[in-house]
Image (cartoon, rainbow, N blue to C red; front, side, top):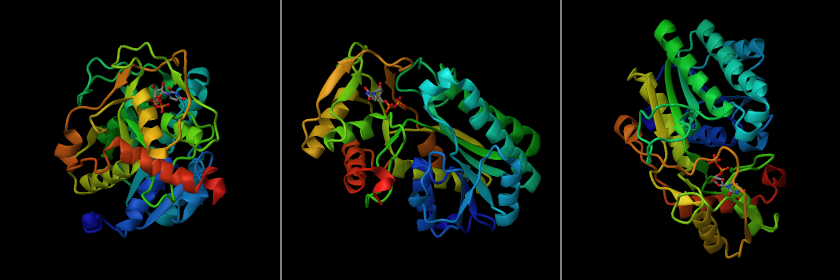
Length: 338
Ligand code: UDP
């Protein structure tokens, strides 16, 4: 990826939401390639400690602040991670999601258009597919989200598509499966407040910060009755963003693809793997299903590989859990430990 620079015009990459979980790994990956980065983040869920790049502390609801950042830094492209991401909250407070995700992205696109910045790599989600009609989910599966979070991500994709058609925006929408893991040196990782994701919660039990892990339902139509997910290492996600950026800057066309490993694990399998890795018994309790959880989400197809040459390098779920454990062991209170 060191040829990223030669493929592109001048200027830094503006990473919106770059202090967040996936954004900060992408920032680190860009910096490792010698690419100049500026982060724009309101720190509502991101962490200043997660980045070494210059930070513009600003909110995408503030168009003046976006304009000022674009004027000051003249980025050659934008990578856009900034969004609210709790499915449950999106059901009870959809207004927040339409404002923070859809409206804020419209602000960003408008200011990019005014400033003549035409490339954007965008964090989308497999939540845009809704209840899958096929497993593994092929590239090009119909998008029919079942919650406001997924719908806002789909609206954002549609906006980019329309802006591309009308104004020449070039975009890559990368639809993630379950992001997990941490940097190999344990310096950056997942730190959400509140934490709702399976792997960090399981590891918090191993660390003694929680008494037990609740398994949301064991009556699904899966091999052990618990939900199956495709856990993709955050380092592999970061790598895909760099490849997508290069793809756009080489004018190879818009891209919509999903990012997963193609292998699914049940909740019980994840807990068992974490028991093995941490050496802790990790007590678990079966509780009722969580609303809105599809039984199985596993990526299929090969568009990311065919178009970007992307294949997960840390695709083994044991590496994903082991790296997350490395971060948490070093930072038992997340970034507050540093
Ligand atoms: N899950 C669970 N207990 C928890 C958190 C999650 O059983 O405390 C399950 C959840 O029902 C889903 C899987 O673990 O089947 C992954 O959930 P997560 O919230 O990590 O990601 P999601 O798939 O919802 O994006």
